[in-house]
Image 1 (spheres, rainbow, N blue to C red):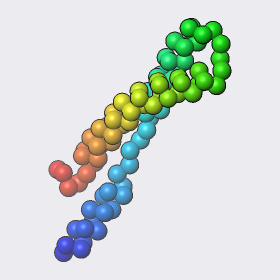
Image 2 (image 1 turned 120 degrees about the horizontal axis):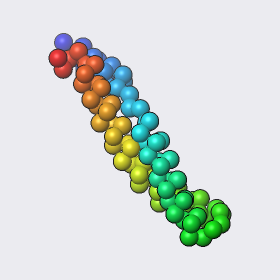
Image 3 (image 1 turned 45 degrees about the horizontal axis):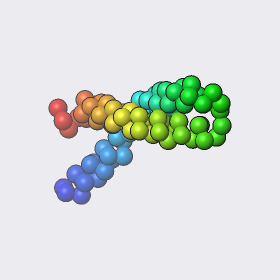
Image 4 (image 1 turned 60 degrees about the vertical axis):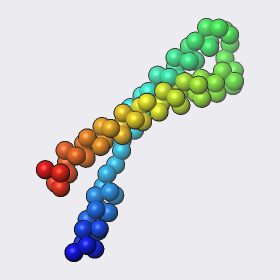
Length: 85
């Protein structure tokens, strides 16, 4: 009985997938925003500006998107799960 429940729980965990749509969207917005601000200040494009906009804008803002993706997937899992009803 316990083995069957453990197996079912493992199957549920394997079927739980997080989508990363908001992560990609928020990263793109963060990169574009920081790149635009840096370009206005320097008036040139170089590797440092691209890397700085990626690390300073894309990654921190992308973490907000990842959190939103996790919560949406968690909510979707609760709605679709037959064990929670």
